[in-house]
Image 1 (tube, rainbow, N blue to C red):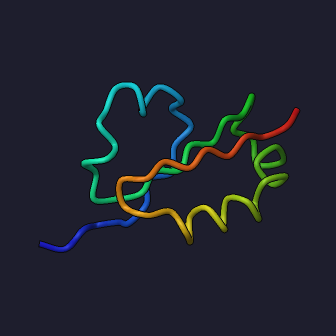
Image 2 (cartoon, rainbow, N blue to C red):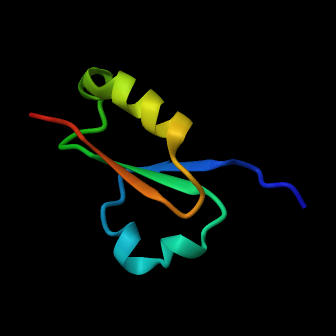
Length: 67
């Protein structure tokens, strides 16, 4: 059965402590941000695109939005 997606993009900072990510068949990108507003997230669009493109299955990449 094929995967529905290759990367999980989330703002859940505790996911890595709740799950064994090494066993995931997808990569995980966590956005550490004070807000999920579009104008805030736009400041890290290039970093997000790079992370979404390069994250490997079972790997976690953290992108921090600077206030």
